[in-house]
Image (cartoon, rainbow, N blue to C red; front, side):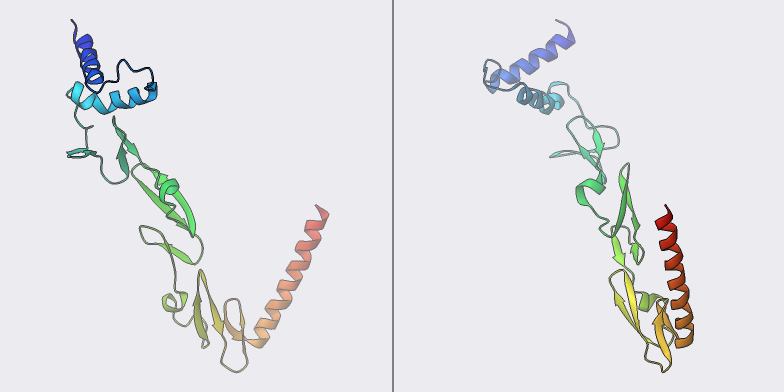
Length: 178
């Protein structure tokens, strides 16, 4: 009897002990899963290199799971969806978030940036209110108005608004010509 046949007999032995080898009702898939589960017993098999043997099986470390044969990368982006305010990039054993404007990556997810605290004076004398992903300026100084996400003298805001209207007109003409 060669070693392979002896190991096969070991599987047959386990099938007979749980009364599965002669059952026509047992699915092939179930038997396959059972064989995978018995691999460590039948082959004196140990955990993959780099993992730690535990009472429950093998601990492959952060970012991996043990599938019964090897350590497999967890796709955190699909499983946990950690970057709700950005784009998730899966790497082997880890992931990274590319956050939308107004958010920053803290090592786990995208968090709102409090622009009012991060950039004190952002509203140039006006009152700053943090909003999710952005901020708003309440321009309290006389003669100022909210534009370009800050408080500027009304004349500068008027010039900016006229320039923005002209840009919108040119863009609309360009888009209509396509």
